[in-house]
Length: 572
Image 1 (cartoon, one colour):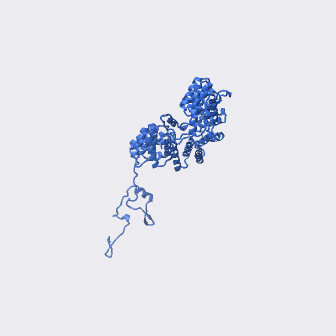
Image 2 (cartoon, rainbow, N blue to C red):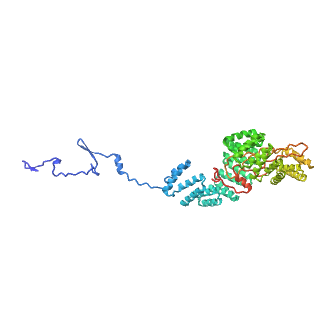
Image 3 (cartoon, one colour):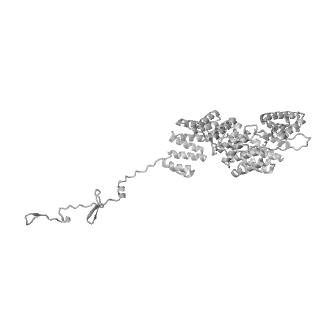
């Protein structure tokens, strides 16, 4: 500042860059603007604030990502997805990885692995895994139920009952599945009262078709056929389109002789499922029992496309050929059935019957001996065995076989008649008279119990023998009432409802009429041997199904075994 000529002061303005009082700020390296300042742009001498892009602001404001935690259940959804798709190999691989990471402490992975092992038939291993699941989560009812199911499949029914009772105690409300399975376990333990109580309580909680079927089976095991039929009728009211219920009820009606109702229910089954092999076989058996062999063969031809390896199907086809007197075809079909089921006594019985008809007595003796070893409680097998021994000139063993047949079949008239003819032919007159009187008593009881009459051939031979022995044969005269169709052969009979599985695979045909070989004698000679007048199963409880051996063991007083390999189990 200087004094000018006017005596005043003068101010000199210097450029900013030359100002000695200017403070120079050194910028920080790598930062163009301080973090507290907003960037500016200089355009044409004007200063304009510049905002950074949005992504830069977000990057600055984004919080730091938390580290991932290895949760125990993080693969459960993937394991479940592969399991419901039945991709078991991938499922087991994921389970191994999950168990390795969690050191075996993942409950769901162990649970699914137990289910897979049980489907593969490894019941004991699955039970151990469910035990581990129960240790990991002792409050889970599902783990206890799966333990009980595995125990049931292992045949340890008492332990299964204890497990189900423990599961029931942990439930907040009644579970119909637990009560249904308790009823099944009690049934296998032959505690029928407890079983009925549990099944009825299960029906109160939920009307399920399997519970109805198991309750009907229980009534049949107790010998109450009518209650079993009523139970199936009640089930059909709730499930009118269930083909299995209609088929089983139709088979029950067949066993009780109500063919019209049986045909209606079997027709209903074929309406809903035209390819149902059980219904097709049952309908064919009904035609076969009424001598309509061509229609029966047409039904069996349809079934053969679905179950070509069924031994019972080939057995019934063979007996159709036998009824049409095509014996070579019958033997061929029976040999195939015997190859598929070598331990089925009914097929062996039929093979013996056909060979006996063809007068091949040695072959008949061979097959009948095998049948009697498999089922020594059937008197008709002993009777045919005695006939073959008679033609083989072994009278001593033939007489013993007849005596055994008469003892095992106390109500069959034809057994007594054949024994009487044998005794008469071998000059045992007193024994023959005693046996013809036994035959007469059995005929009277048969007429009173069934209201039908025996086959004409049997009555005529009985009258001839009575005349030869000097006995009044008026009781052997043919009555005017309806004649009972004889069914002496052993076609696989209709299924007995109430064996170990609720949903069975196929059914059996009923018996086809057959003639035992006659002894061609002249008219002056003594009376002929005659065929058995009834199905060997006719005077007993209805025979059991082919793939249900446990029901036949019920008749024999044996322990009923469990077959976990069947897809359709009693438990649900």
